[in-house]
Image (cartoon, rainbow, N blue to C red; front, side, top):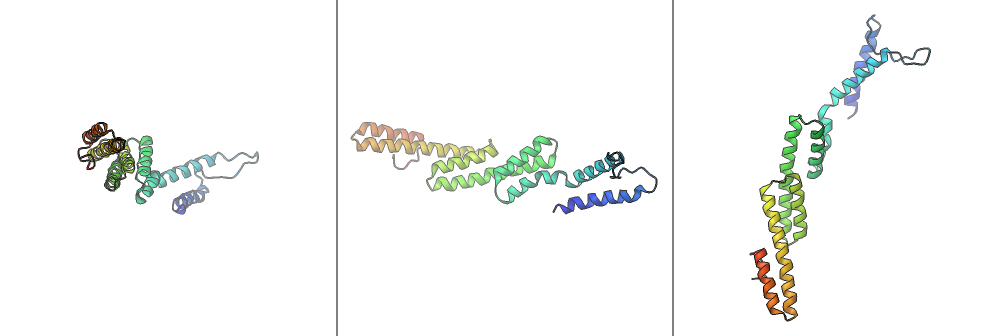
Length: 193
């Protein structure tokens, strides 16, 4: 917890405080002067404390939120967090690697969810899942292919429904035309065959 970060820093300042009396000007005196101003020696101690805290917390705390999201299968939130950290630290090889792994995992996660949803006939939901995956990894081949199929199936379903309505209205030629267009959009459409 927070004690793991603060306690070593406080210990370091306390140790310097004890050394202060040896005649060296170690900047850790936090007493106020008679005029109410903070002793100049305090500034160095505060800088040391701040440097210690930064060193102890380091990059893991910056990616900690992303790692929490990963553990909860909140893949897009994890990707966003890693991207924020990488924007601030573009040379951080570890964060870049974690981002890439998370993008791949997110793409696969949303691909699998989208395929299950599409197989159950919920095309709009499947398209949303594929869009999520593509926002993580826009050049993911399987996701692009699945997205195109879902969009084609949705278009074919709409054309088929129009054809059914036209047939029920007695407009058989127009209905046949819609069924043909449905098959053009998605050759595997069973109703339009």
